[in-house]
Amino acid sequence: MTAIPLSPVSAPRVWRTAQFLGVVATLALVGGLVVWPTLTLHLLWNIAIPVLPAVFVMNPMIWRNVCPLATLNSMIGSRATTRSPSIRTTRHLWWVGVVLLGLLVPARRFLFNTDGPALAWTIIAVAIIALVAGVFAARRAGFCNTLCPVLPAEKLYGQRPLIEVGNARCSPCTACTHVGCIDLARMKTVPQTIGPARRTSRWLTTPFGVFAAAFPGFIIGYFTTENGPLSTAPSVYLHIGAFAAGSYLLVMAAVSLIRINAERALRVLGWISVLTYYSFWFATR
Image 1 (cartoon, rainbow, N blue to C red):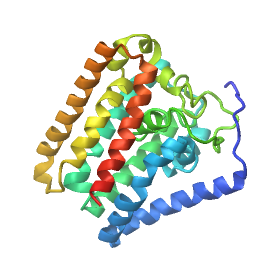
Image 2 (tube, one colour):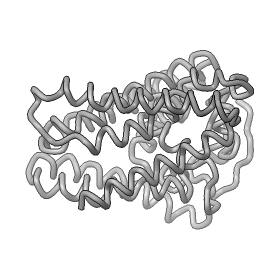
Image 3 (cartoon, rainbow, N blue to C red):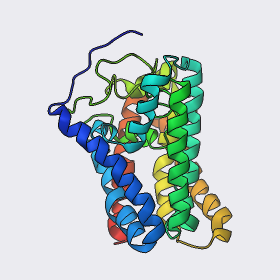
C-alpha cells in the first residue's frame, strides 16, 4: 500500500493511553448499564454525549483519535488484511452508516434512554461489527470510514475545524479508504464524499447530501418526541421521519431558489444543525 505521511500528534503516549482508557471506559459503561442503569444512562445521555457535537466542531480528530470502536476496528484491520473496499463500495457503505444513524437515534426514545441492558447489548453488537469489519477491510476502512453511524455527524460538524489536531492512529497513512477519508484530508473529506455531484444540485441525492439536508429536521423531530414504551416506536420514527423529510424539502427548495452551491450550503447546514441541537438541549435541561 502507498504510505502517505500525516501530521502526527504531539505526546503520542498520552493519546495511546487515552485510547486504552477509552476501551476500559466502554467496558465500564457496558457493566454500568447492566448493574446501575439509571445512573449510567444519566451520565451517558446528559453529560457525555452532549459534549460530542462541540468536540466535532473543534476538530473531529479529537474524538477519532480516542474512539474505542476505532481502536477495536484498527486493532484488527491493521493486522488481518490489506484489502480495501472500492470507491463504489465505499459510497454504498456510507448509505448504511446514514441508515444506522437514522435507526439508532430515534430508538433512544422508546428503548435506549431508559433500558440500560438493551443499550449495553447494542454497544456490544456494534463493537463486534467494528472488530469483524477489520477482518474484511484494511485498517479503518471497514467501519470507521464507512459503516460508523457517527461518521456523517463528524463530517457535517467538522467541515472547518477550529483547532488543528494531528493523527494518533494512521501515520503513515496507507490509503485504506480511497475516497472521502476524514483522517487523511479533513478539509476535503466532504467534497470527496459527495463527489462530482457537488457541482450541481445533485449533491442533494448523495448519501451525505440527504443526511445533511434532513439533519436539522431530524434533530427537531427527536427533541419534540418523548420517552415512551416500545409500542411507541412506529410513532417515534414517523414523527422524526416527517420532520427530517420536511427539512430535506425545505433545503431542496432553498437550493433551487437561492442557487447556493454545495460547499456553502453544507457549511450552513452544519452550523444550523449544531445550534439547533444545543438550543433544544439547553431548553430541556
